[in-house]
Image 1 (cartoon, rainbow, N blue to C red):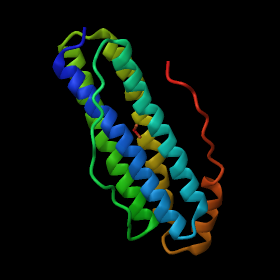
Image 2 (tube, rainbow, N blue to C red):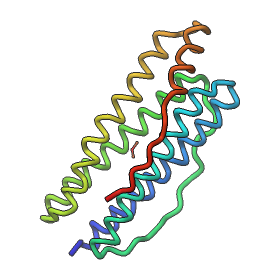
Image 3 (cartoon, rainbow, N blue to C red):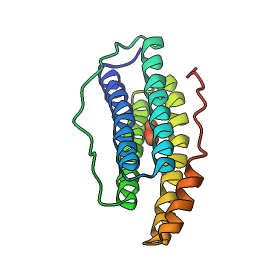
Length: 169
Ligand code: FEO
């Protein structure tokens, strides 16, 4: 049995995962407008992955007897000063999500919800990967600086990312 507080926070997390997808689609649109189809494709794959994160929390709430409560969110940022600024913004967003996951884990521990802790363990590991992959691209963009050819090479590289849908357990 999940507490009211835990159900509320899990619903908040569904909101933030869907918001992450929405934000990354907005950033994908920015990259499309900047004629960087590879960066745009990478962000679209990221947006699809965020949808599966939301689905994981949604499924868990349904299975664990918590009522789902989908919420609205504000307009995401659509315009950026540069590809670097867009990825730095994304990395900060991922750090925010990591903090939320850690807070959720603390709450699940306080309330003795073992099932929620097992669910969150997957997200703790996932956030390490998320921050690492965004952080690596931020570093590459820093190194590229104003080198147009370097940016085109990165664009070609990121175009190879594909989305593999694994239905959440
Ligand atoms: Fe679902 Fe990128 O955190």
